Length: 375
Image 1: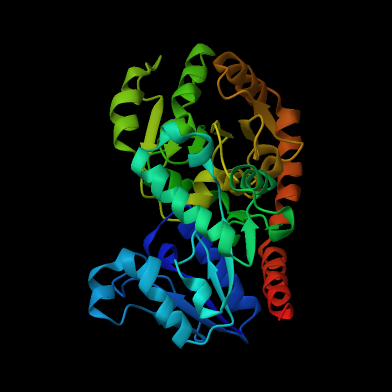
Image 2: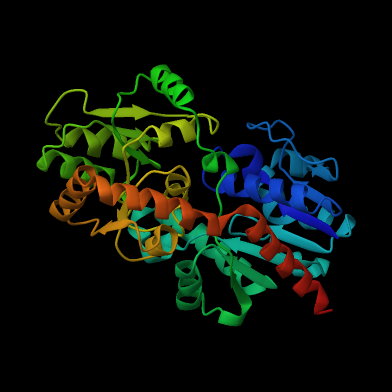
């Protein structure tokens, strides 16, 4: 097969959609090297050094207009090159398909990660909501098959865009295999020393923004008088980091450690060095840090409702993300009950194996073949 991908995120995004794109492509290269892969990228001057397979080709704009107006190329002009490359399938890895792709007669797949902007538009700029809605709606209605990263996202597609359930296939996200490799104590200590981390800490991984709810986690730690520092790893959003977080008072100095731009090769050691992972997000499409923590052998506390139990399983602990006292109580419980923590670690490691890459990639290849068999 000749399979094309919107690979912009793989080469330009360090987290989230970038990780999903890289993980998907890498596993296709490993498990299905017999196919030809076309990676459509707006520029060869990429931010991330992503090594692609010898059977993969990097496709960039060929016209002056495409080279100057990269977003326009990705949304419209790319169709001409998709047609010229005689693809069997084009897969939009990050929520969208180029407008007019149906005219190429190429079979299409789109992965929809979440519809948070539809459920909580107040968290986004109005212009962004309009742009996202137009792109997502087009992709959802014109793709031959939609891949949803959780049942929650599949339900949202049915609710907001009236998509037929038969058109949607749920294929759970996966995480980098690095998180499944338990590291020697010496290596973990070296990474801790590099980032000046304490012996014990509670870990949070995610963007520093309102939806991720970090401020309520801080308040929960405060009211419970927990003296273990909180290490937060993630990209800062300007308003939330500068105007919301400063209004949250810590009971002790040095209780909050913020780190940005962690290399994926160092992140597993930071997970494995933590005593507890807390992910108090208000809404997610999947919540991949939950999976990373479980694969790393760290007890997980996350939010009630939504997709969180799909990712976290029955063994993780759940709190109402808006109830600070409940969150505080559950954090204290997890920190003080050694037997509970051991059970959460063991069952979490086992549960995380259901998301192993070979299985998810096999399911993806089944989707591709099923589409082509409809001809």
